[in-house]
Image (cartoon, rainbow, N blue to C red; front, side, top):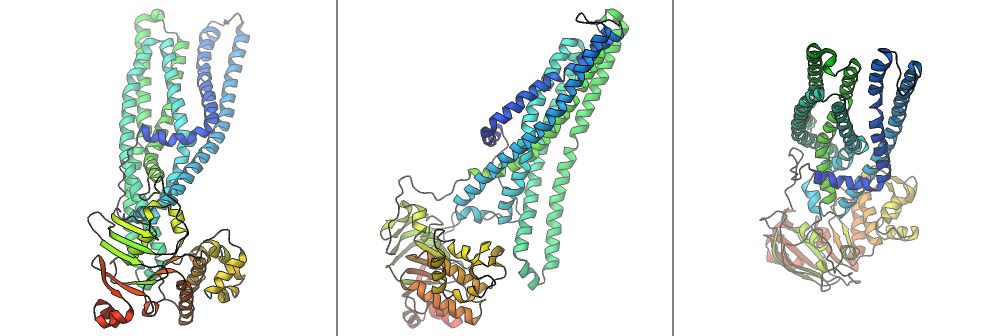
Length: 599
């Protein structure tokens, strides 16, 4: 497991923005290729159509206004009317098309974002705890919300528009050479250095964008952490310190964004500056040609005006490309993070030939198991344990010794570095995770309650369970009495994380959820220190029922919970320091004896 990335530490993402990464993202556009290709085709048509007005202007100036003649066998008025009608038609067509293009592409872009968010969330469900251990919840949340949302505009407009704008620029350049190759060379001499300047600006934006995204992600992670811990903050009068930390994190994030914005703002001055340099060079070249060759220069007034109009048409696509390149550059770090979520592979997967674990009795065996969360730092070494079915094992010991590690390995939330863990003789690495966990009931200290109803939360363990089965489970753990006293009984709405319910009530609902699955192996890490005496008594009675017919692993928080365990394991020094019943261990006067007397 990688070291946890805290809110003040930047994420180290090795992926770089590249055509390969963009290709991975564009595969999400494939289901909508018909819409995108249709819009792209119409954009090409528009690209050709918008070249007509300047050409018509040249014809009107050279053949209508100057000579009062017509073209194509038409007279003066007919030529002028046709040119004006075509010009108006092109403008109207472009306006109408632009409206529908933006509407369709925005709709398509957000559909693509929905698909990306779906896959990212789906992969998060597969990832093992090491991934969540390595990132704060706030940073993961940013990836699925802000990062994905900011990509919507890229898919809705930036990519396709950039391609079409590049095509439009190419068409204009070709037409400039057809009009007058001499002036076109002058324009090209300006366009090439402009393109390189924009390229280097984009690279700088990409670098600064990564820094800015990291700092923004750090800020969100701190906000999420502080909101979750607001009770502790107030209890210990840390609000002033929290404000100072937030001010520092926010200042750092804002400073990085200012650095990004400063270089972002160079795009338009750079593109506009090169445009006016090119325009000045064209005027200077035209004046030189007229002064030297006069009418023999081959450059008419209509041609010059048409040429300058085409040059003016360079502005919108160049500026559009500049804006889109900014979007692509700043969105690239978002893309890195989103693709990272989608492509991160879980460290624990089912083997190709994984079997379904048959109904178990509950015997659990550890064979020379070694495990560490970080490379080179082991928590358990050559750990051996054999628990017969139906026995209750209590785990005690100092914080960080490995009590939770033992039970997390049984559920295969983590994979041992070496050794085997068996249930009824089956190596848990050889069976599917779903068939394994379906026969193990787990209740940890965090008695999590989902938004919904009390009934929904009990049924969460078995979606197909009937109301009667859920109620029966609640009765077994003595939760029924307090539930029926709630405003709407089992249909009472539960808020985020069970707000409005006491810690004891949440634990009883979680115990009902556990009982509903009727597991053969039970893992309990139930802290009762913050629960009133009456509720604690109910929980202790419920635990006796739960532990009665199952193989149980109980992480002890109170002596009353473990006194009657079949075996107590004192976990320390990367293994089992002491093992035995309560009476046996008290007679030894060892570590367990000292622990009990300290309590």
